[in-house]
Each structure stands twice: as C-alpha cells, then as structure tokens.
Length: 532
Image (cartoon, rainbow, N blue to C red; front, side):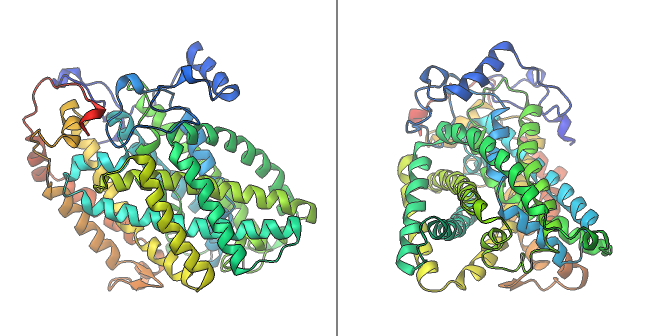
C-alpha cells in the first residue's frame, strides 16, 4: 500500500468510517500563532515547566518508561524532530563515509548521487517509523510487540540492544580519543592508558547524566547543538575545502553501476538504518493531532541533509587527505589539515557531535532493556548500559585497540537484522492503518488476552527468513555469506535484499488475512501508566 494511503492514530472507535488520512506526505503543516510562540519560548526558556507535563520536563528525570504516553502528557510539535535528528547527524564521522565512497571508485557526481539516494531512502524509513511513535506513544521496540507479539519481539529486541550497545562502545571510545587529543592541544598532555581510562569515564559520566534525565532534556539540548554545530560546520568546511585539488576531482572517471549500488548501500547502512530502532523513541510524546506527513518530513530532512552535505565534503577531501577512509582515527587526520588556531574548536565540536549520538543511543538502549524484561525504572536501566559500555570500552583502550575494527564489523553485520525488522514493522503499519487503543493497553497488561499477545508467527518467519537470506549475500571482515560472490559481494546489498523479502512475506494475502482476524471490540478502556 502506498505510504500516502496509510491511516493512523490510536483511538477508541474501531469503525473503519472513523479512520482519518494518515501519513499524507503532501499535506502541508500550517503553524498556528500558538505553535510559533512555542518555538520562541523553547529557544529562550526551555526550562519553563508550564510548557511540559510533570512526567517529561527539561533538566528533570523523565518518569515515563515504555508504557504508552497519555494524551494529557503529550506535547511539542513535529518540527522539534528536525533539531533532534539534525544534531544527531552533524558529525565529522560522516565525512569519512564520503572518503569510503571514493575507495570503491565513485567520482564526485556518482558519490553525490549515492549520498542523496542512500540518505533520503534510509532516513525516510526513520520518518515513517517515527509516525508509529506518535500513533502509539511508546518506544520503538515496545511498539514492535504489535507485529511480532510479546515473545516474538524478544529476537528483534535482543538484536537491537546489542547493536545499540555496540555502537555506544564504539562512539565512547572515539569520543575518549577526541578528548585526549583535546587535552593535548589545550594543555600539551600526552595520551597514556591511564588518561584514556579517565577520558572514557568522563564520557560515560556526561552521557549517563543526560541520558538519565530523558526525552525533554535531550530534545532541548539537540535544539542548541543543531545551531552550534551547524554554524561551526559552515565555518569549518571552507577551511578544509581550501586544500581540495579541484583538477583531480574534475578528472574522476565514472565507475560501474554496481559500484554505485554499493555506494548507496554503504550510505544507507551508515545513515538511516543505524537509527531505525530509535525512531519512535523521540516522537512518542507528540500529540495525536500532529500530521503524520509532518512527522515524516521533519525527521527525514533533519536526518538526511547533514549526511548528504558532509558525505560530499568527504568525497572532495579524499583526493587531498591521504588515507582518510582507512585511518583508525580520521578525526585526528582532519585536524592536521586545519590551521593550528582551529584545532581546539574543531576537536570540541567533534566531541560534542559524538556525545549527542552517545546520549541518544544510551537513552534508547535503556528503553530497550525494559522491553527485554528488565524490571527497573528507565533512569536505572541506562546505568546498566553505562557500566557495560565502561567495561568494554576500557578493555578496548587499555588492551587491544585492534579489537575495535573487528568489533565494529560485527556491529555492522547486525544492520541486516535491523533492516529486515524495520521492513516488517513498516509493512505492519501499512496493513493495520492505525493502533487500536485496546491493543496498546494489552502490550503492558498481563491480565488482558490478545490475539497477538505472545507470538505472531508470520512476522517472526518473515524477519528470520529475510535476515538469513540477507546475511547470505553479505560480506564483512568477520563474516561472508555463501552467496556473497560476484556482483553481490561487491555491492553489499544483502540487507536490502533481505528487507524486500521480509516485507513481501509479511504483506502477502494469507498472512494479512490471519493478522486481520483480531476480534477487537468497538470501545476500550483508557490507558494508564500504572498498569505497566
């Protein structure tokens, strides 16, 4: 079903006639005077409690867990998602993706095409999944129980948590290295193992403080970070582009279409797919009245624009900065290309960008633990993740730096499972149009029976089949599928093939008929967070 025909919001009436148009991608969002006034107040007074419910206020600990957010606690506008995802993707690391595209033979125009297509398509998926958060008012992996069932969702939830935790470790280690470089540039303190351990401990302390505070605090910070990093990037990029050898860039030869497909695959995996399992976590507080199309639009724009821009910059720099794609510390390599007076601001900006990604991942992995059955408050589950990140990160820094490369390859392998899960989730949204209020109530109450309560075999079968097929076409340093030969070995399209298969299996008429037989009543009780 086309996305523009999706319907969707949780409501008490299950009559088809009561359904309203959902995503409506072409429907413009008109700001009211009250909305515009809210933006100004958020800019100057983000701590004003009157704008936020008691459960979700900036600089206070968020009290909601994975239960559905009540209508009375919903707040904000879809435009806030622009700042959330803009800050998350303004990172120097994206420049490295552009350099990687040149290593597979893409010239400037082919690389730019791969950056646009890969970023927009993958970030569009993040936007669509964000609509689910507005529909259901719950985190992404909690809503994933609807298509998979409570027990069936354990598999995707485990893959998601391992992926989140793994990327948090990688981000924490890189942030610690940037912090060491900042110490060196500021105080001429040489890096040592002990100082490295102190750096990663400081990274975790900052991340845990902000991640524990929760959604409203993160959203408020993202607004300011977007402006700070955005303006700094506009100052930084011209300094880097001064070194570009434009004659070499202009002489780039075109690559084969297989290489272009491979470039699109690389960008999509590093872009939207890596954020897919966080999507609804940052849209679940939006009022149900927010247009679905606006949620998709602002999420996609905020995610894709910085990626496209920075990847193109990376393509331009690849002919000037040697070994940018393969260097284990690309941030340090770029530092050498800048004037000495720019070193400290550059490293500080790089550190802030990494910390934003760290905090977002930590917040979502804490919610993910709750979905897996950890009986603790959200503010406590982030501490569990923090301890694990500290232990693994300290090992990487003190014992085996080369371990980081293999560890990163393993985490990248999980992108196939994330992509196929997202395909099933989006197919379920297209089939069911909306989330019935009783369904959401059943997610958190052990007393109510549910047709999809325990295990939804069509969804689980579609996910597992797509993942297995996708992995068979995947080639990484730690794993090579038996079908990853020839064009498939060169294009890295395994997760895309797996996603198409998963969506096709789940959306077939037989499975659709089985899922539609839910016998839901016409009315249902209101949701209560105390029933979790």
